[in-house]
Image (tube, rainbow over all chains, first blue to last red; front, side):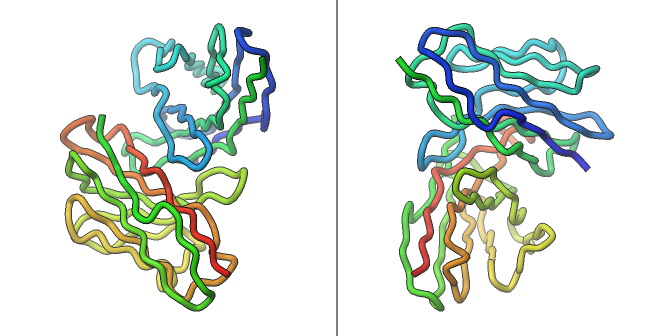
Length: 113
Length: 118
């Protein structure tokens, strides 16, 4: 069975500072990894995904993530955050069949001036 | 990108009534749709996977007689919460998979439906 751990439930950061949101996964098979963002009372929007190839994945809104197989991690980073990045961020894993996504518990990013 | 809509966005009903939520893929054909439930400040929990023209596959612990799912066409899936009770109050989100556009690898999410049962 696959699982995703997001250790940080909330990450406060000042505007224009860098941020890293942590994600660790467990799986006995090859995985595909995703980061989604959710704004209040809205659905999820895909930020980026890792399927294969380069372990550094660039996404929308200036976000990037690095797949580290040895550490079973897929941390999300942004070098300089904006107030508008305040939202809930979910890491998710899918197996090779893409039958379903398993989500982490989410990390709330709070950007203050 | 692919767009998924949900209707209604918000619904309030009395205990014991049934509520239907629609999920539509607006600009692609979705052979598979997924229904999730999200409690306040928690993650999304998959309730069921719906394939067009066949019965939905429910996750363990989800009552299929209470949460009726119909996927009658390639652009529409419905979730009916039957005999709703206050504990069914939640945020319900659907997603759809496009086999011919982005392929199998991405699910496109709807904006969600806030259900409040009084």
